[in-house]
Length: 552
Ligand code: GLC
Ligand code: CA
Image (cartoon, rainbow, N blue to C red):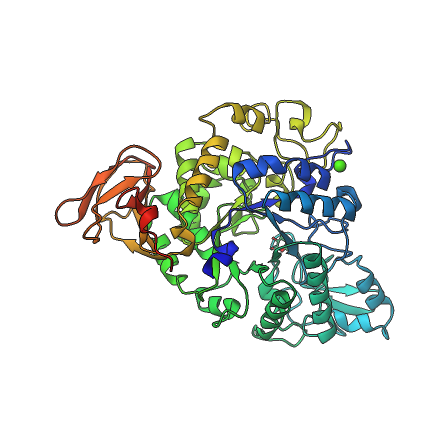
């Protein structure tokens, strides 16, 4: 039965239709373009595509400001194009999940228009209002420095409305049963069109009590159970992946403790500590973060990522740790954002250093959960710091050395294609890397293949093995009488470590990626020398492990 939980060993690829591939020459990516690039994604080994918002929207927040939940923005194509794309993805065995943005709508959504203009409309209560300016009107902004308040005055309604995010994103009153019904209807619609679930945007805010009189934060988690039950009724194997950057003591509230809420959550705590480890070489805080987030219900899973469509949020690190990451990876003010994060792509953050890029990816692919790749990171794309806020890392995919990186034939693309001497499309593109066996693209493809052949990582029990070094992390996974051990040296210098493997019959460690295997001593201890930024994927025992794999 456990094999049915496909999301536990998926390879997720996060893509923005708008900036992936334009087929009709208007400078904007479209579903037809994404569909034509499905062979590329299948070749890479992707098993699930996460679509960033593609709904009709004025796109003041890149589509996270929706005006119609039941459609496709015309610039990306028609609903017909969407269905064609879904069919082609299914043919290749690739699942699709959609971003579900239900904490707020666009201020231009017909619901809000009706709500603000007509006090008797049922939509009035779909949003969150106050007659007077609330006491906390300028508290709790998600985008400090850019966003001025969380309440704004609407001169049409003559009321204040609540917006956790930008002022053009009024919050939905998610306590209203009609709003909840509507959310389920939206889910039902896209499930019917073939999606395998949703990435649920801004979930902590969706379940929070909203209103002018709310003092200390309070959540209603029952709605998560409602969403889960509905989803599973409509489609048994669909899944919900929550964006919830919360403290570990809240994790089980989101997962539910009897497999009854979110199937997956992004592990933001580990993400930030991975970057600290990459910046400092010290894996100890990462070890703590892994242990703190170890607990999860049996069917639940963590999603691990390096970069995503937003800034790299470092808000959960200590001030000192955050400064360390800033100093190493985003020293200039223009690289930082919202007083807490870095708005760069992965490759420039790691100085384009191939050893560190491989280390970072190898680590992500072997953390206890499901890996999520950000489009373009597989070829080491860069950023454009002249673009505002998070757009710096949202530029078009670089396919080739053709004009506009082969993304579009238009003179002007929706966001400028990167064209600098380090990360520009002439230097960094898919076509060149496809031809080069040593390229990052081909390395990524191979590491994905290796990851798929190590299902222990997604399914298994894991524990951290002592290495005797603050710079080297070793994790052992056990599943169905098979085991793998993943070792990462975060330091620039080589280290000698000792690893104890207690399996009496299986004394060797077989390197999955290269030819240097290790034979343990009588006491089961392996002495390993691992180069600076080195990584090792080992199988415990021999290559006959497949024969030893038990059925349960
Ligand atoms: C999430 C998205 C982000 C968006 C915000 C508001 O954090 O990842 O891009 O701005 O929600 O919807
Ligand atoms: Ca187009």
